[in-house]
Image 1: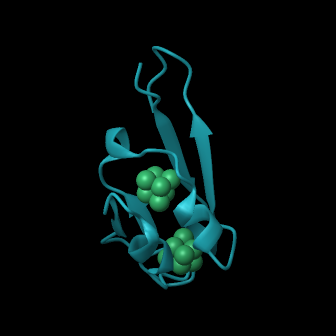
Image 2: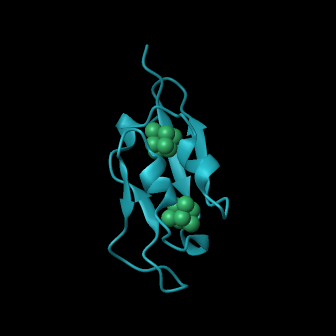
Length: 77
Ligand code: SF4
Ligand code: SF4
């Protein structure tokens, strides 16, 4: 059974440095087109079901903006 994960960003703490985007082995992170309250384009996930929960993005983020949750069976992100 494939495990599913939810990646949550603290949008307003993100400075759009793209380190998480470059760290993701699945290339499923991007900068949002909207800006946060600091005026940066924050990182977001564009293909949630493809996340393998490796935590690479969260480990890479210098500002600890990313949390990853494993979803229960049948739970949706
Ligand atoms: S947990 Fe891994 S696969 Fe999922 S978004 Fe982060 S780096 Fe990408
Ligand atoms: S590494 Fe952190 S601060 Fe940089 S873009 Fe990703 S979430 Fe934002």
